[in-house]
Structure formats: structure tokens, C-alpha cells
Length: 345
Image (tube, rainbow, N blue to C red; front, side, top):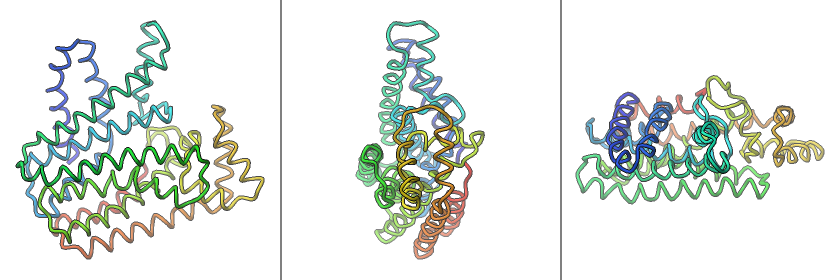
């Protein structure tokens, strides 16, 4: 699946190059860093759309690979914009896209602020990826009736993604200290967009019956929350050589995750005040991240998040077991529960 989706993504980008070159060779040059960027990643959203289609009895075909590949452009949009908002330095083991544009500006000694140029160029590239996701989905070659069934799901997916992104930044500035708002962010920023809606979209394209759609959505939402909770742990404890991001990056960015909420609830007043102060700080001193991690490690927060992951993964398994999904698809989706919740990157 990864190879087939990667090939389709590269074909689509190569097809866009002449159009951008007609605007200007400088604009056509955007294709190269984007091609490198999109070569990485797990391609989970594409995979879940494909297996949602197969679960409903859809055949393996190039057209559904095209539809699945559209999810990769939506993901590229989200990641490029997310890195700008979080001021992240790296992604997938490379400089984040806005950092690449910042470096381009600095090397050329152009006028103005390199940082401002980098952020603006990355935002525009993310917007372009969002547009291309639509173009690839609508031009994937599936019958018009199938696309008409899928379009409302796709529209909802995009709205929920942006709403979840807004919730994420809102909870940070509100200084959220509770677990439930953190889980709500996880549901809408990641769970629905990563697993639930891609499955739903694939099933809708294949004209799945309502009972199967409900089962796949229940599976997808539960697994999606577990996936995001694992991501939260990797954001603090992950190996940078494996995750492609610095260790403790989520703490440095002041992310109000379930892990942080549990830690804040477990600490005494002094510890809670110290962790809250470092979460809000903009200091780049590595000692700041070390202090926060030490405080989190002094609580049961990590164990509590691991327990939540197990609980949500079990819910996903139960929903899938009760479904009438195609047997091959059900087997793969069962395997993906382990892949999504036990991952190290």
C-alpha cells in the first residue's frame, strides 16, 4: 500500500510541475521539497481509506489508490501548517518546511525577515496541498455516484480537522489542566481525521450499509484516540532518530495533552506551579524540557495514559469484531490496532 500510494503521489506531483513552471520556474521549484517531504510518513490515512473501501466489499483497483492518495496531501497540509503554528524545527528527520524556506531566504540574503518569509511560504504550500487533495480525490476515476456518496464525508473530515486544530491552540492558551478537554482535542485533531473519517470515506465510496459504517466509525474513533495518546507519549519519550522530532518537543511547545493533564492533577501545589510555569515559558534552554519531564516522571501520568491506550484499543477491537466487514479487511484492521498503538514513531 505504501509503495502504491507513494507512486501515485509522485505521479500527481510530476503532473503538476508543468503547470507551476508555466507560472514561473521559481514556483515549479516547490515540487521538489514537497516530493521529498511526502516520501516519508506512515501513510495511515491512505491505508484506512483503502481498508474502509475493502471492508465494504470494494475491489482492489487503481482508482481507490488515487482516492487514498488524496489523504496524503491533506496530511501534508496539516503537518506543514501545524509546524508553523508550533514553531517546530524538524519533521520526519528533516528541517520543517517553514525552516527550509527560512534557510533559502537567509542563504540568498533576500530583503526582509527570513522567518516571516519561511512561515508565509509554508502556509501557501500547505494551502496548495489542501487544494491538490480535492483535485486528486475528485479526479481519482471512481464513478460519479461513488464520489457523490463520499463528498459529504470528506467535507466533514476537513471541517473537523480544522476545528480540532483550533481546539488544540485554544486549550494551550486557556491553560487547560483537565483530561477531558485534552481527549476532546485528541478526538478531533487526530482520531477522527486519522482513522475514523478515512475509514468512513472509504466505506461511503463503496456504498457500505449503515450498520457497517457505524461499526467502522466506532472502531476508528476508539483506535484514533489510542493512536493520538501514543503520539503524546512519543512526543515526550520517543527516540528522535526514530520519530524524526526532538525528544520532549511536545513539552517544549507547551502542549496540553492528557499526559500533562494527569501530571498536573497528581503533583502537589509547588510541583503543579513549576510545571505550569515551564509549559508557558518560551525559553529554549534544554534544561526547561528536562525539568518538565522530571516532574511528569514523578507522577503516575505515563502509566495512566498507557492504561487509556489499552482501553481504547480494546474498544476498537470489540467494535470490529461485531461488524460484518469483509474477512480480509477485518483481519488487516485487527493488525492495525497493534500497529497504531505499539508504534515507536
